[in-house]
Image 1 (cartoon, rainbow, N blue to C red):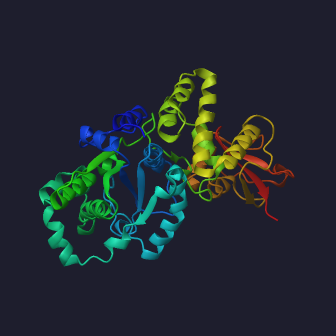
Image 2: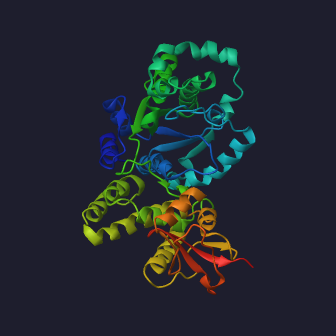
Image 3: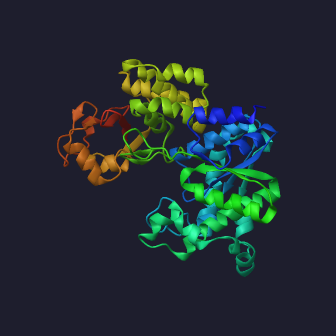
Length: 407
C-alpha cells in the first residue's frame, strides 16, 4: 500500500486536489492502513454524465491504493434536491423514478470500482434517511447546526438571491448525517466530492467531531470546465451521458477526440488511469500529432465506461467515417423516411439539441447529407440521397450519424 503522502501526491499531480481540511492528518490516516471513504451521487437522472467521471476516477485511484470505497446513491437526498450550484429549485422526483434511476446508475459506478472487488460498497441513503423521526432528528442532529454558518456557505448564497426553499435548506444537514451514519456503520472517515460540496462535507466532519469525538476528513476536487470556459460534457446536442442508450459509445468516443487541444493533457490525467509517464509523452505532442493523444484519451475513457470491445468498435467506426474508408455499419444508425426536413432529422437523430439549433447549423453551412451540402432549412431527405448502406448526415466537421430508410 502506498503511503498517505504518496497517494495524495498522485491525486494532486493528476489535478484532483482542490481543498483538504487537514492534509497532515489525512496523510497520516491514509498511511496507517486501508481507509474507508465515500462519495455521493444523487440519482436525478437515469444515467451519470461525463462530469461524474472526475469523482469516479478519483475513487478508482484510492481503491487501487488499497482503500475501501463507498458510493452513496442518494435515494433520500434526491427527494430534497441539492441547491449547490443551482439557481432554481430542482425538479421534485417520485420515489419510483429515483429508485429506477439508482438501479440504472449502479452498474456505471461499479465499472470504476472494479479494482476494489468485494471491498467496494454501494449503499442508498434512503435506507437511513426515510425512516427518520423528524422531531427526534431535529433534537439530536439539527441542534448542532448554525443557521448563520449555513447561510454563509456558497451553496446557499447563490440561492438566497432567487429564493431558498426550506426543503433545500435541509440538504446540508442530511448530507452531514450521511457522513455520520457511514462512520458509525462502516468506519468511514473521509468524504470526497466536487468543490461545490466543500461546505456540506465540512458540516459532516464537524458533526462527527461533535457527536463521536472523532476526526473526519474532507477532500474536494476542482470543478472542471473546458479551456473555452464551458461545462465539461456539454455539446451542441446536449449532455454526454455514461449510458450507451443515451450517448452511444461512438458519440462518447468522438466527444473526447474533439476536445480542445488545451484540454487533452488535463483530461488524460483526470479521466483515465493511464500512467503519468505515458500521459506526459502524449500531452507533449504538438500540431497534427496531438490527434494521437486525443485518440488515446478517447479510447481510454470509452474503455472505462463501455468496455474494451465497445472502445475498439468506436475507434474503428471513427476511422472508417472520418478516414475516407466509408462508414460501414459501425457508425450509429438512425432510421428516417424520405421527405423529412433535414432540420427535423438533425434534432431527432441527436445531432442538434433542438430544431432551432439545427436551423442555425444549416444557415451556417455546416450540414451535409453524403456529399450534398444542405443550403436551406426547407431541404428534405431524398430517396436518391440514401444508398443501400445508408448515408452519412454530417453536423459540422465532427458529428455524424448514418441514416437509413425505415422499412
